[in-house]
Length: 356
Image (cartoon, rainbow, N blue to C red; front, side):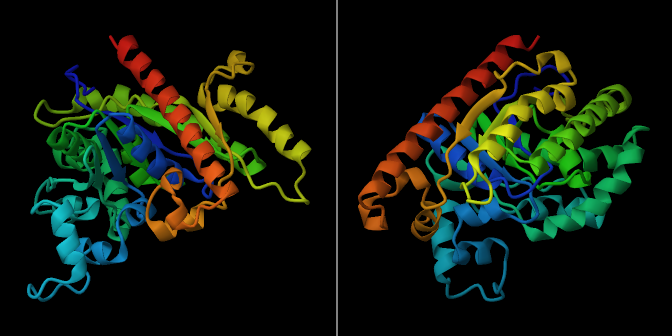
């Protein structure tokens, strides 16, 4: 929902943890496919300059084309160009190309059509060049506090890009992948999100990430809603900056001999406590495990097969090398992601009901 109270087609979910290496992009990729499988129109948005989500959806030829590497000649069409023309519109582009006019000081967001992955699933591709937008966003933040229109257009660029892309494809859910840091790009990305889902591992580093993340979200929300929104002109679409914590997903590690189950359980038991105090700012909810959306098993053995087959782990078949007991693991993976997706949908629906 935007600041004018108009209902948006899409509700956005940012997947974020200040600690990297917890399987955030893998989770985003599989959630997008499963939600589409469950009948939803899903927009995946890659706002991580590392662009790993984009690399999961598109092969190297397609990446080369959409990033315009080696595209000096218009003819003949390379294999990547031919394939991408079947999945992209004439005005498709990356997040970086969309904000390029702002970067150059020549205009506003250049809205582009998302790339079609399958019917019901679209991608706004990421780009390593997006990292150059960090300094521009940092410089725009203080000027946004005084209502400078150019600064506000910069700070709201991701929100307006997600809204436009969602409306173009009539999406009802946007999954936003962001990098593991608290920099200016992530601040703008998270402000654009209605909700935040936090993937984490049951270890010391993820807990430290939660302790940093919670206060940062509250500060950004407070500053945006109190000091920025009142100064936004009516002709600039701006997010509410809700960033509602919707819960967390525990990604189980592959157990090692030097990291016994008891050590894992010790950190797992602390997750609800840290989430309640640092993220919710409500220590009284320390015993409340309802924010644990799911615990996902470790599917490390399926990932190489899925990577080679260029499909979700739960879609692997015997022809992809998923034989014998591996096929049973594939079926379990399907059920796990189906359950996770259904629980996520329940929480999003409750948010819609609770909104004034």
